[in-house]
Amino acid sequence: MSDITTWICTGCALLCEDIQVYAANGRVEKVEHACMMGKSRVTGCKHIAKPMVDHTEVTIDKAISKAAHILKNADNPVLYGWGNSTSQAQIAGIELARVLNAVIDSTSSFCQGITINEILQGQMPSCTLEDVREKADVILYWGADPMSSHPRHLSKYSYFPRGDMRQHGYEEDRKAIAIDVRQSRTARICKDMFYRIPPGSDLEFMKALLDALDGKVPKLSFDLDIKRLLELATLLKQCEFGVIFAGLGLVYSIKEDIQILSGLISKLNELSNFSLIPMVGHFNMRGFNHNLFNETGYIHRVKFTDKGPVSGIEFSIIEQLKGNADAILIIGSDPLASLPGALSKRIEDIPLILIDPCENLTTKAADVTIPCKASGIEEGGTAYRMDGEIIELSPFVQSKGMSDEMIIQRIIKEIN
Amino acid sequence: MTSAMEIYQLLPKTNCKECNESTCMAFAVALLSGSRQYTECPPLIKDDKYHNSRIKLEEILKPIRGAEETGLIVHEELCSGCGNCVVACPVNVANDPHGSGRGFGPTNDKVIFRVIDGKVKAANIEECRRFGKNRIMCNACIDPCPTEAIEFV
Image (cartoon, rainbow over all chains, first blue to last red; front, side, top):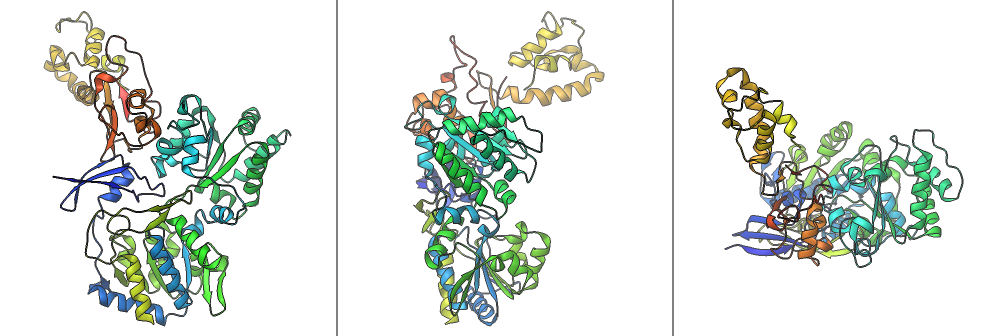
């Protein structure tokens, strides 16, 4: 007989709360309502990580002692990852960085950090995904393809559901718009409301859109019918509750130049009502930004010093790897599979400690591997959804391992 | 989506009537509807020159055999489990307005589409608007599918 559990999915930052997991003797037999990403997350690792030091299996205590030894003896240790950790583990990680006077950074450093910073600084209006479901009539996916990155985004929140104020759902009450460099899966759903722009031209498109909103004739250096741009401006002006989902395409294109995007949102709010939600990938990547902001006033790229925390581009994971990082602790991330080759090589060259439930490409290069429980499955805690809502996770598997929070607390204890 | 013309091109096109259909095109339509099997065409089976056609027919007719009475096919290998069809299907919305209709997983068994193990599964197919006497050409599940995993034959 299977036990049926309602599970909060930790497959992505949507944190879907309606997943039904049928499990018998700790083994998952059936998963209902989860997408492929959620199903893959709940079924667990292909290969479970083992405690290792210098590629030899050891006890977890030895692995933790070795990790503490490496970090304590490093001049410039870096703590990185955190997107797949609970808020409790992230707060413990910030404490570890404080103890070590270390640099702490997350994947948001080259991801949604700049948009989340604007929201946390109160410079950019945001809303919850429930607001989107109940109220949104114009939904703009900019440089984002949720149909690939967050499969249930459109069906659960942003386009297809019938909301309190959008009873006719997508057929009559909602308009979905995609701005992208290619016809993504999401763009296909948006049909004739898809605006294809050349790579890197988002700022130019934004300026042209601002002109159109001001009633000026917009100019574009690339081939796009100006009439369509004017139609878009009219649609944005007339909406009752608009939301922009900013994807990595937009963030990478505007680089650190967030002012024009902020300007566009301000302009839209003079004319109608618009919010922005960043398309956060990992289930608690936004949580790291919130937790670090609460502790230090900065969202990422932080270095703890005797005088207190400081932040700057020089403390980003990329600059640290190019520069003087001499030990790195990676938690819940697989940078060797995601970072460019030159940076991955640099990670391999310095003492590398990895805390992760699964074996991955980075475990193969790690000097110390410490296996932890899978957050949200074997271990509870809280996480921040992509819209900044705090969600209590619902673990359903009992296991004997240590959570990532416990491991970090043990490392702190050994260092002290 | 496989068309009758596509099937016809793989048949002998001699209108020999050995299958008891009036033309090869009529036989192609019968194959598409699932009421006949390509093995019921004697020349196609006997003559070796149709070897490649037989292989191709086997390949393109395979999904049709799995089709429901309304002609619904779910290509599970393409499905990402996004649930767009679950929320967009008017039968799901009517039978489960506070579950599927609002974007959640279905809360009862009266729905046509639900996602199980990351793939959409169809049930209660007699409820489909394409079924029965008053059927209409409803496209509500096909249209929102980003991967073209759903089709009607």
